[in-house]
Image (cartoon, rainbow, N blue to C red; front, side, top):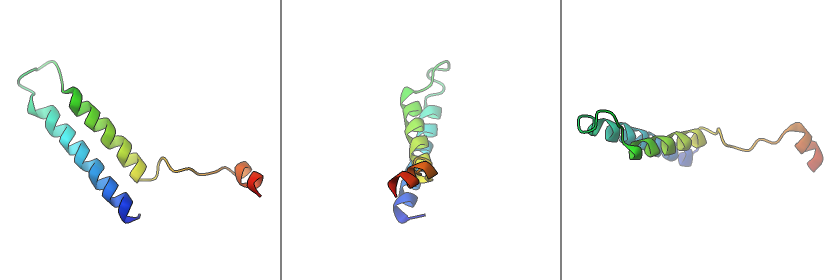
Length: 69
C-alpha cells in the first residue's frame, strides 16, 4: 500500500469517526431524526475507504488485454 493510499484511508476513517460523533451528538434534541450531515460524511468516508483499499481500481479483462496486443 502506497503512502497516498494510507493517507486516504486515514482521512476516510476520520470522516467515519466524525459522522458517528455528529450523529450521536444531538441524540437527545431530536430522538426520531438523525443528522443528514452525518449520513453524508459516512457515505463519503465509505467511498474513500473503498477507493483507498483498491476497490475502484481498473483491472482489464483478458479480452481487453488481447485486443490491445
